[in-house]
Length: 132
Image (cartoon, rainbow, N blue to C red; front, top):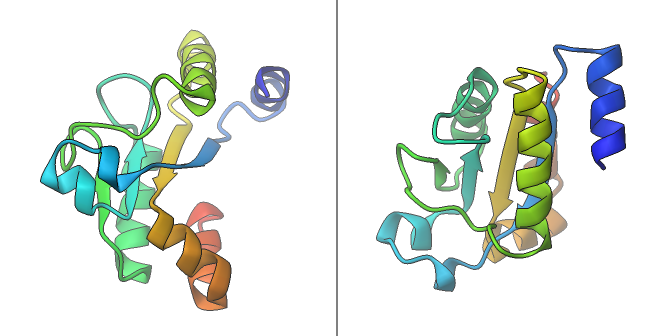
């Protein structure tokens, strides 16, 4: 994953990397985190422009609770597991390259199920990810 990310940034320096993974709402300690369907974050404490744009798009196209770290939720779903380790490694690489293009998109089990079943949810997510 890191080699691919580094190669992609070499070819297209303004590209974005979106890491999709799940999170367990029951393990979130805040009400905002426990009720979130999607949590968006970047690497570090401040979200980047890609996260702002993606968050606005998802909120417009989907009827789910979209939260942005650290403004609307102060916790993320990955941190110590493999997704969290990958998140940190890619984030560090993006930071080394001075890129603001890393987006971490955590999905609740409800959202993942809706995404699996309903083509309109898939289409809306894809439209936002591809900036259609």
